[in-house]
Length: 143
Image (cartoon, rainbow, N blue to C red; front, side, top):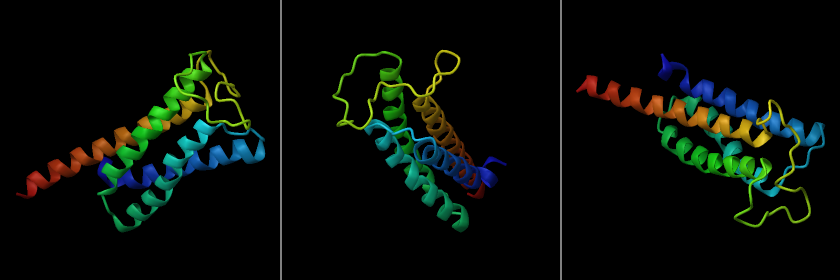
């Protein structure tokens, strides 16, 4: 069941993530910091890749998505850490645009925009791991 809808679900969730980041920056005027832009770099291509993979039923996308989402997850968690008051290990690449530690959204005392992004990356990783496992088990049954 997961295999049947994994690619389409991933495409839809990645598309929603991309659209929402664009809505926040273009419609609401929230200027993304340098780290947020890096996170977008690892999310936006996945929309195209998942769309193509869903159309072609190409399950080899899983490993590429795991790598892209893993890097995006690290960036999102680091940005969330900074927004929760953590000390910066690396210099903020904002260069005068927007401070990486500034919180635009802060709900329930811990939910920030980078945490929402991290949740999306975790969802994509877990879904792709399920897809890989199901495909592996399916190939064992054919032997």
